[in-house]
Length: 307
Image (cartoon, rainbow, N blue to C red; front, top):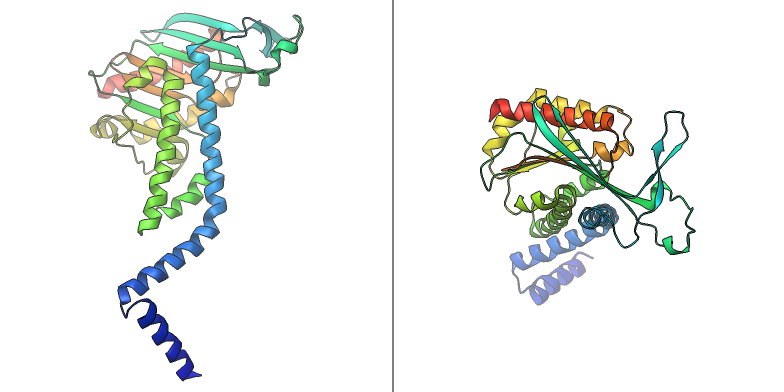
């Protein structure tokens, strides 16, 4: 039996690999990778699906900002609740509010448009449900202004377990690095849609490629926020345990916004124009706009102290 095994080994080692251990190790590594890759294919699909859904969502938001009136014209839709608990009805379109909070002037624009594919079959009195409507808002504040070309973006991100599972692929080895590159490319594509959809024209000032990202010692903060900037030194000045805790605690509050979870997943962008805050919801009431403006003002005051 031993002689048979030796014969097989010599045939394989010398006949196929020419007696070269390097070729043998490459073949074994490739086989090992293939087995591991098959095991993790489900995780990859799950993560890819998460990013595809995010990209689709950002595309919708981008359209709603750029073409608020859309092709559908004006329609009635449900928008949260009245004080007595009955469904509130408003029209699709653009809503604008202005104010001044803690010394900072701000403008809040909300965009509400139909996404219902069968809108043509509805009668003129039909009221569209909330899931048949796309919403987005953009709050601009005359606060801290960076130098031209400089930026800081803080993204409140959804918690996606699939991305954590996939992170194990970003280890050593050429195949793992290749998969890591593809993963990063998908993330960059999602961020591109995110920046243009949430921040409009200001989003074009973000240079995603090569931009440093912030790494916090607070794992909860890393789970829920992602930040990139034009200069890594911004992170040292801006992020502190108190500031990170403030962002996390504000996100956990229930302030009664329409689609509150969407406002929790907001984005903050500082450029040479000041602050832009974007989210996939809408605010048309002055008191609710004031709550969001107060949050933006607190962030701006923190930035003003350290810049």
